[in-house]
Amino acid sequence: MSERSFPSIFAGMLSPFLIWAGHFGAVYAINTVICARGLDRETLWGVSPAPVAVTVATLAALLCVAAVAVWAARDTGPADPDLRRFGRWLRMAGAGVAFVAILWSGLPALQLPACA
Image (cartoon, rainbow, N blue to C red; front, side, top):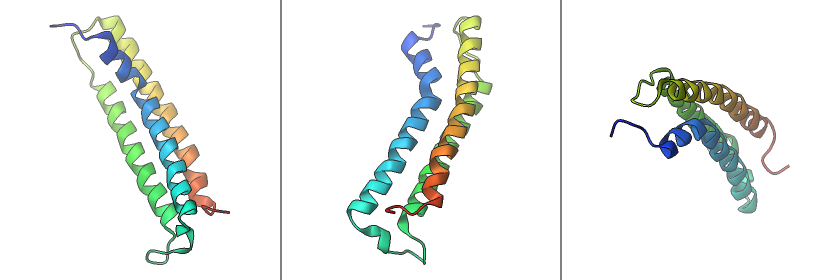
């Protein structure tokens, strides 16, 4: 089969936004678990676990978005050239927006105490 299916093309276009949504949920889940369990008073090498976990989640999400951007830049598939060009543009633009959104939701979680 030489054509890509619409669901796979659509999923590729949505991938940066899905990564951002996963990161957004992870940041809130991390802070919720830490506050609910009273782990904000614990330290690991002198650092609260919330900033460490949020940093790991943020870096993982940024790496995933960078991978999507690289994938979009190298996209040469059997689909219609106009559709492929549009999909590539949307993935690249979405990766830029998702990169900023991930930083936007990750940085305040790093700067503020988890359970204040």
